[in-house]
Amino acid sequence: MSKLLFDRPYVYGRGEKYVAVEDDLITYIGSEHPDKPFDRVISGKNRLMLPGLYNLHTHAAMTLFRGYGEELPLSRWLNERIFPAEDLLTPERVYVASKLACAEMIKNGIVSFSDMYFFCDETAKAVLESGMKANISRSIVSFDPDADPASDGRVKEALKLYDEYNGEGNDRLRVDLSLHAEYTNTERMCRYLAGEAKNRDAVIQIHLSETEDEHKACIGRHNMTPAEFMQFCGVFESPTVAAHCVFVSDGDIEILKNSGVTVAHNPISNLKLGSGTAPLNKFLNCGVNVALGTDGAASNNTLDIMKEMYVAAILHKGIERRADIISAKSVIKMATENGAAAQRRDGCGVISEGKKADLILIDTDTINNIPSFDPAYTAVYSANSSDVLLTVCDGEILYENGEFAKIDIERIKSDMKKISENYFK
Ligand SMILES: [Zn+2]
Image (cartoon, rainbow, N blue to C red):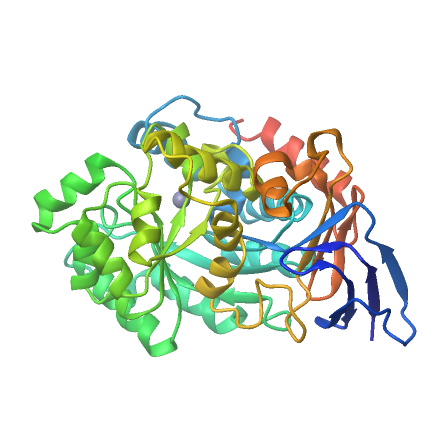
């Protein structure tokens, strides 16, 4: 049983407190030094403690394509660069790229992510080895309306992945089901997967209304918006994480709210691909659960939720010309509690006694963080992910002062460079 004591960091929402961690749980937060021995005491001087961060939309293995296919709109980026490159994926490539992504996320204070991709066994392996949490899913696409979804190879893979890995690693690894998007799936497939998710009480991940073209084309095809279509197909009868939601009507927002759909807001990817900006303030005013995502490294190009927090907080102020919207506190909640809720991880996403010990320490003694009047403002507006000194997941220190506890980072970097150099040969 491992016992850690954090010696009075500034605990977000609680002030300067001792924090005790025993095994995977926070067992004490208080002003008095707990009267028991600890394996290790970690100084909290000039340290801000936040809950570990959640990345609710990514494609971890797309670190392979970081910087490949720049400055193109979504449809050309996908069809001319990403889809042909993805034809050359192999299990080994996905494993190394996923492991690199895990390292990047852990270093940036992320303890859990939601992922949709291929060769998911490899991503599962990378997650389990890295010590972090993830909800992974095999992305489904289908174009033949007459094809039987039950005999679709991708669907079989997705369900096998669920059976083999859901709950592995002491429940660190969960398996969701995933429809890539409305424009890449038939109605029959959407209905079938919705049924399979319901049978398993599984979460569904989808891309929804990422661009104006996608939104309009769906109306042309089905006389329904993508949100209306997914509701019509029964997808929203399971807990759903819908990435992007850039072009949504007021009616769509009502549907998302009433169906309990979580919007994964990916402001940087949406800006970089020129897709637009999601109506975050409307989501929040309507009571939609919003979490933050990076999307894949090919459209971002980093897996850094602190960057997303900063952009989410300032972007909408500028668009709506109002400095008083999207508070720092609401952005921190999106990056922690709301993400954990969307992954249905009870007891995660907050710093409290009896909850999971998923914590990060931010150095507030860096030039960019001095002085610090309010920890929420420091975390969102001043701090960088390079100020993250320590990442703890399920009570285990995964990263501390530049060192990874469970990842041979030099080996992964070297393997990734070799793969990249030979990728198209
Ligand atoms: Zn995506």
